[in-house]
Length: 370
Image 1 (spheres, rainbow, N blue to C red):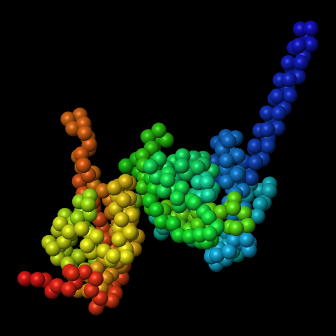
Image 2: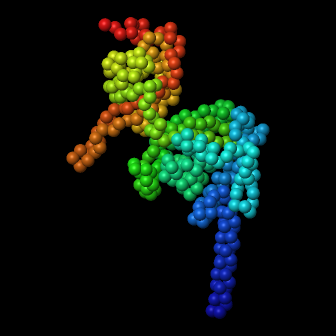
């Protein structure tokens, strides 16, 4: 009886080893099909292989749907992507060199963008991220982000806004613009070094993009986004920018001299006044959104809006703003202090439009009243 028991156990152990061997071979073949470097594939565990495989399959389905008649709107004039599956060569997509931009040109576009690309499914799954995501987030796209849900990495207070931007309905049309700010986990330290996931901080991203809604198959509908960290590194001063400081109610506490040549206002006459006084009435919602993002997330980009010129008319501008924190809490000061101010850099994007139009009382008074 004991001998039969041992024999059955040996047979069971051998069958289990055979199943594990077959399973390992299947996962090995599957990992070799992923369009990743061999050094990256060698360190993937089984859940990661499944997660990345599903992401690339969904991306391939999206590209095929984009090129088909099932997805109308603007997809037809976009750059054509590689497609097809080449089994046995370690690639998921087969390149079509005559239809895709060279790799060097793609890297140049990403460098100019000063951010990374992200494709989100309607449920928030990150089905694609560009290779340069690690430069800005300190997280590898293959092993830590791609295939995961965006809600696992974003600030809980931003989840409702993200859901709102992901919400897709056929009645709203096929192509809708998206422009929002969200906070996401970053493993980069203040010195630019990569830390571990336990010491992540929140990085503010300015996300702009467009919804691609494919009627034929809702499973491949997605949100295409360009994500740029704030503050933007190209926020430089020039002859067409001016800097200003504001209280948390957006009243001017400081403005540099360049505002006189650009808008016609003297810095001293702006002190104590709200930036809403200089904004075109139809664009106050743009400033409201920017102000709300500043209060909640400490950094924001306003988008384009119209600012009134002293002599009449208006110019198109865009403001990049950040909240300057007060004194950090310490043992002697356990309670955190109030924010110090809002620092804003405003870009003037156009010349004066409709200079004879008067939209505020300021524009009806002489330029410099005595």
